[in-house]
Amino acid sequence: MESSSSHSHSSPSVGLAGHYSEPSFTGREENARVGIGRRPLHYTGRDGWSSRIGCRTLYATAAGAAAGFGVGVYKGAGYARWMGIMSTNFALVTAGFCGSQELVREIRAADPDDPLNCVPGGLISGGVLGRLQGGPSRALPCALLFAVVGTTLQYGVNRLEDYRLRRFIEISNPELVPKKEVLLEHKAETVKWNFPEWFPIQVLDVEAAAKRKAEQELDFKRRVDSLHTGEKT
Image (cartoon, rainbow, N blue to C red):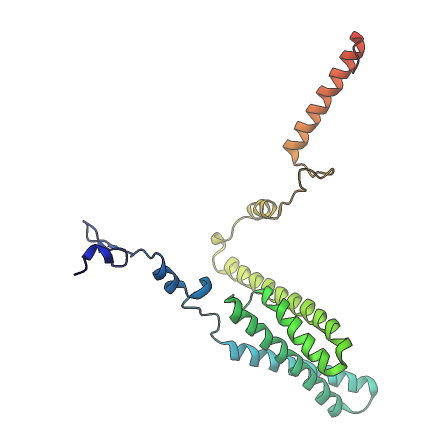
């Protein structure tokens, strides 16, 4: 007969005051909780993947039709033909890129708006489409182009969403928005980067620069004193 103590690590407990305490997970139970390879068991990033691909493809199709109309105006004829060609190309490129992006997102179990999903997604879709359209010589250039353009667009969209959210908060409840000085100080702390200690060129802050200057002045003073006393330096 098994003892009740063998299940104590997985069963909830109630304290003296009647408060519920979360069970602790260890070993095999922890792996079952987060899934294989530390993947979240209840991953929700895949929700709405088809609508993301469909909506972006429709937007790209409309943009391609507008671009085709502009080409038709420039050439003075063939409006429908150019609109059909450009809209089809835009739709194929966008659908291929977004599909690869969603595949990478699913593999990484990442956020749908993570720009890092666009790097391998752009390489995959660009390489395939470039190979199909222009042969092996076009695969690598198209892959790099898709990766750079796709990552840049995703990063720009994320920044635009952050700006819109911040503006909404500023209008609805300005007290929740931190002051500009606090944001600049936080940005300076997070973006700060220094060269390695062995590197001959160093970027010093105000305190370190003052300390370095004091050391140089003290060394200069010692050299002058040694010359006055006739000692060799």
